Every structure is written in structure tokens, then in C-alpha cells.
Image (cartoon, rainbow, N blue to C red; front, side):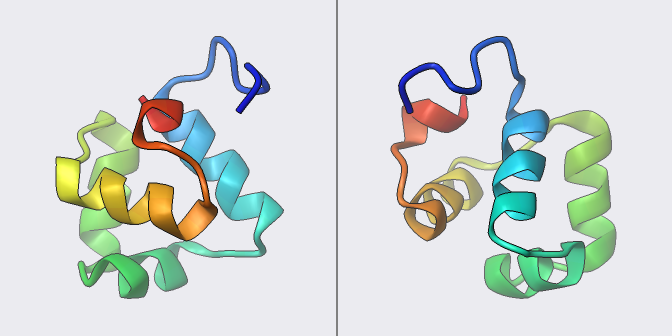
Length: 68
């Protein structure tokens, strides 16, 4: 990602990628096949599972290491 998100944590990166792709929390929940409450918890605690991160990396066309 050429350090465009340098200094960002995973939550900040996901939020920025969501904004750039016109994605809301409900569509993210649907894509990850989890509830919107779980998405909210992920954002609050910055506690993502590896499979979720892999799906997000694939969705946004980046590598897993770009997200963490």
C-alpha cells in the first residue's frame, strides 16, 4: 500500500477502505457474514479474526500485511 496508511491501526485502515469503497457497516457485516453488532465490537476492540482480515484484504485488493 506504499505506506499510505502508515501509523494507522487496523480499525482506521478498514474504516478508510470502507469510505473509499462506499461501504457501510451493514454491507461489511453482510460481506463477512457476521452481525452488525459483531462488526461494531470489532471496531471498538480492534479484535479481528484472521479469516475476517483475509476476506477484507481480498475485498479491497490488498495484502493481509497491509491491514495489520
